[in-house]
Length: 373
Ligand SMILES: Nc1nc2c(ncn2[C@@H]2O[C@H](COP(=O)(O)OP(=O)(O)OP(=O)(O)O)[C@@H](O)[C@H]2O)c(=O)[nH]1
Ligand SMILES: [Zn+2]
Image (tube, rainbow, N blue to C red; front, side):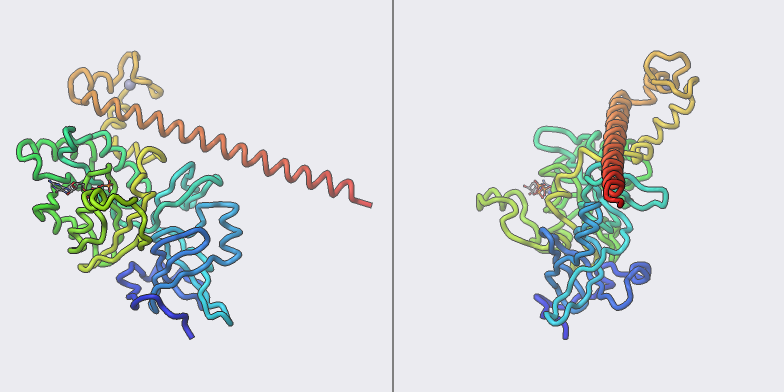
């Protein structure tokens, strides 16, 4: 009765399925995890194999109003068998536990995600975010601002960040200081040194990923993300830069799953979108990453202190005493400005959307008024 599977069977639990997802499954529906999406269809891994499934009319209708409702990699999908074709259709996306969202989206009062018609979900139900920052990047040192930024994004997705200082073998001296500095810019976050080429730290990384947990690796190009994933997988599941440079072909010429299981347990999501994530969608995660600066700011004499020239400014005092590094102060200001800009942009879009709705309603009212006998 079931459609032919394109590959072997899948154990739902090791794909991350659990009781709370099960409780959200509509009666009679078949669960599966989205491993890749392509315009209007998804590859879904289910107990009876991998299936290429199209979206139901309802899913498409919802998405027209709100793109963030569209299925994305990592989603748990409810599928229904369509007769007589005997193929599955994707009928609903189960509520997401965490989500990486690009573009003007905020959490609503119920803690859910609400879009403003422009958002796009890059990955869903991610448990752990590995922030990869190279100890040495070409001729540049590690970039603390970049770490801050990616940790903010990780917190905002709802997942737990872990910072990995990659290519630790390239920095024989000063590694401990770097780890300390990074600990300072990411309070409450585990920081580990890693050398994928030497196989150092890889087990620690594995330890952060439970047997059914889902991870993404964020980091600048060349940070060693693919090398890490290959080390975790114990096989070349991702092309590293050298391989790409060697064959001279484009990066994403082959169609491949964007969610895959590691042999030792756990899953990794890797998509072009997730690889590019970084410079937008900064919001309340800023407070968490800069909790030390926020604490200082609470001690300013004026509640609305701009930390510019005001008397009794605790932030300026900490800067002067060296307690607060200049660099950290600057990146706090920068990310705050961005968060404020994002908020304004979202507000403007919501206002526009509201106006558009009312225009339609008024037009409807006028029309029905005219048509009344
Ligand atoms: N010395 C050293 N080199 C490493 C390590 N990990 C990765 N590299 C090298 O760094 C280069 C980039 O590694 P990738 O894994 O392709 O980096 P990436 O983050 O996936 O890069 P993009 O695909 O561009 O995002 C490759 O030449 C790797 O061999 C490490 O632990 N130590
Ligand atoms: Zn102040």
